[in-house]
Each structure stands twice: as structure tokens, then as C-alpha cells.
Image 1 (tube, rainbow, N blue to C red):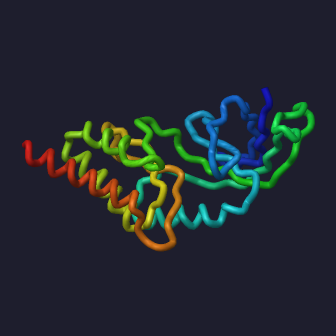
Image 2: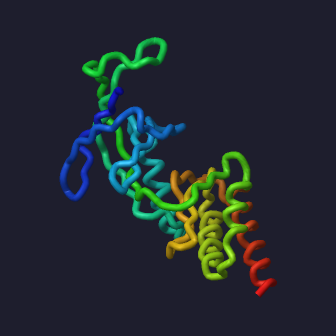
Image 3: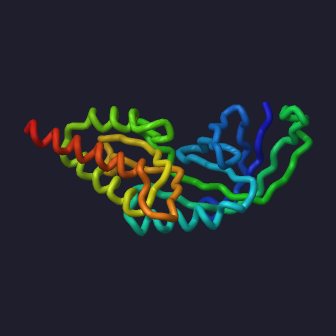
Length: 199
């Protein structure tokens, strides 16, 4: 099975090299892919084109109080097998080297949601929650998502965590709020109202 070699990643003040199995990749539309490395999730990029935008988006998200968990970006060198004209990997010893970066986040536990195909999964997860305090925390997070202009929202919901919702793969709109974030807020507020009416 082909591997991806990621070197120069700084963790705990040390530069490390990691060999990532291509068979374990989680596909990504904007990066080479995602891998679980220990208790972390690594999103590996083979160029630095998106680095400044991602850093800016993460900074703005934190300023607005969007729960994203510990997240950092570190430069690296990515070496991956060469593909032939059909997209198949050639022998492992033939590697292309790229200057890129890794977006490192915690590997969150909980139910994954994305609004790429509508609000159905998010609505289903919210309707399972009847704890008012948990819903208030999700409401604050969704309000922050609207305020910061989060687009293409996705993340994890785990009602037993102090932060019951965590957003991942942050992309911010340059023109204000987005419909998806507004929809999340409305769904959460409707659920809060329903829970309070039945207590």
C-alpha cells in the first residue's frame, strides 16, 4: 500500500516525520487528505496557497467564540508517490516532494454533521437533545457561527461534553452570514422553545 511521508511537523518543540498509510486517508475536497494520528486529526496540504486564508479564518473564528477546539497549523514537507497518467501510484521509491502544511486538530468524539446536503442530520441530532443547558451552549455556538459568517458548517455534536458542539474545517464568508449557519440557529432555538414548553 502506498504511503505519504510528512516531515518537519513540529509537535512538542520537536520536528517529527510521520509515515501515513494511503489506505487510511479520509478524502478531502481541498487537501491531499485527512489522517488520524494518535488522538489528533491531520489535514495535509501539498502547497501553501491556502495557508494564510486558513490562519485568518481560524483567528476570526476564535475571536467570535466559535468552538473549534485546539487547532494549529504547522509547515511541513510532504513526499508522496508519483501517479501515472491513469492516476495509479507508481513504485514507492519514486516520490514527489512538496512544501505544504498540516492543519492539526483534536480527533473529536461524537456524531458528525455537515450541512453540505441540507439540515436533516443536524436537525435529527438536535431533536435528540432535551437538556436546556446543552441546548443553550449549542445556541451560543450557532450564534457565533452566524456572527462570524461560517459557511459550509460541519463538526461534531456530543451532548455529554462541556462544549457539546465543535466545528471543524472552518471556512468563513467574506460577506457576512450564510444561510446554513442561520438554519442551524433557527433549528436550535426552535428545539429550545419546544423543550421549555414541555417542562
